[in-house]
Length: 86
Image (cartoon, rainbow, N blue to C red; front, side, top):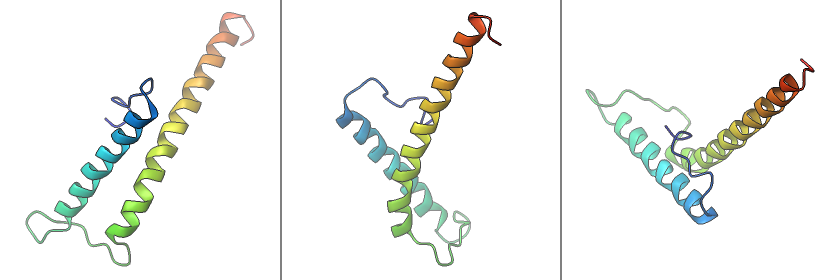
């Protein structure tokens, strides 16, 4: 869902806002899963929400970059196929 609705062609401010909104959504989900039974089911151990706040935006950015890389590679493969190189 994150990638499906990601605003690739909008301004950087809107893209950052989109990532922040998803950060809030994922943090809310994690907070709910940390509640006692019957709602919660996570037990972190040494991990805490502070780690999540720092790591999630990095993971979102890595996901976006990876998606763009895959799309670029697919376009290159299609061009090579059309030229008869594959």
